[in-house]
Image (cartoon, rainbow, N blue to C red; front, side):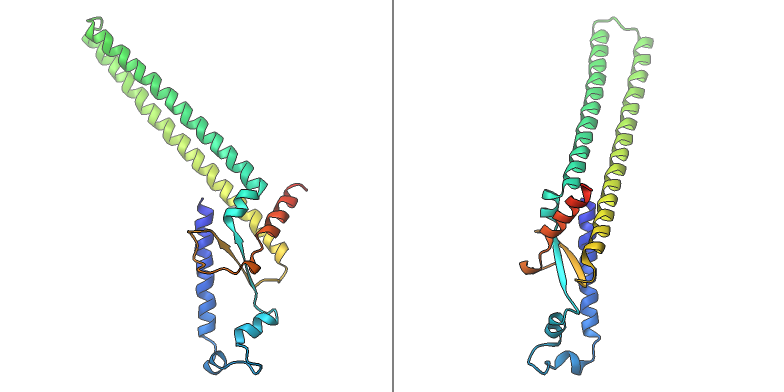
Amino acid sequence: MMIHQQIAKNGFLLVAMAGLMTACQPKDKAASPAADGKSAGTEAEANGSFKIAYVDLDSLEAHYGYFKEKKAELEKKQEQMDNELKAKARALQNEVAALQQKAQAGQLSQADGQAAERDLMQKNQQLEVNRQNMQQSYMQQEAQFNDDLQNKLDIFLQAFNKGRYAYIFSYRKGASNILYKDTQYDITADVIKGLNETATK
């Protein structure tokens, strides 16, 4: 869904910003090791001044109750919309077939045929308008769902984090700007648990 693409883009931006901050440090501090042999970045991480974590979006979607429920609702609406449009299209095709049979049997005057043809064209245009309206309505509902999901995640992570991590990235297999992940920084299970508990309150 869009939210995942946007989250991935934001993650890439944060990575770039972190790299820029590192590049802007004085060279003597950035290049020289710490007194105890550790790098400056390792020392800062050990002191807790810079920690990162990540959330696996595939796992989040698979186990977050709110996401699964709303996704199922959207899929049901999509199916209903498709069925309705297909039924109207079949009815229109049947009208066309019936008109052709009358014309072939000589049961339709030229004037009646032209009038019926105009009527069918109007119905076809209306069907297209209905299709576009339904599609637009579905896209608006999907966008609202994405906004609600992002808002819930933002609010929860702000309360959950409480200064523990400098950055919390998103990760999705095959669609992430994170090239390597250490599973000790995976907070997905905690986030899923917290989100589901929040939903039941």
